[in-house]
Length: 263
Image (cartoon, rainbow, N blue to C red; front, top):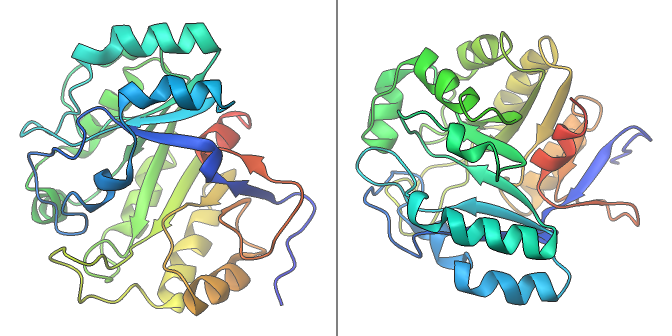
């Protein structure tokens, strides 16, 4: 039986609208995603309608070009206009750029980035290579609060670089979002299994040694796996996104916004 403590933050992410600045386009065909998740995202042209409906937070993301960048430059002016007009907050998901991101300082409220401690694994999944230090330095060049994300079992459900990644990130950040690999239909990894509950739990327990705040992010396998996972982690994490236990007291929006308030 899950028993979330009073200090637990339960997050309903549907109140943050995901927006792809590239539509369904992505130059890559990553093994775990294959452009699948872009299809359900909204377009910039739809943002004002959502703002008028009362939505106040948006995840700004998109497909990656061959340099690992999300091409924000052509849309920043429009995004800033909408933000100021409706008093919005933005979580920018940055991909894997190698450029200075200081241009985000005046528009982003928080920056989310995925991290790899194994260059060979990153090359396998994304077809990109990035030094460990460069990934962190680039994110922090935004001048905005950064929330690192790590996908547990991203290598076809196997635990690979996760323990090393946690120890590296802990040198720079107090909070982390841990997602769980989800086999996705139509991708190269669709026949893989998510990591075992025990393997996933071991990663979270290791994270507990280093981080002030740990979030179980929005990427979690559905069904009984999610129930068992949340039950095992209910006394380990500080934030649970998409909790199976219903509540009348949710944090409404991306967990990155909830963690930002803890800095």
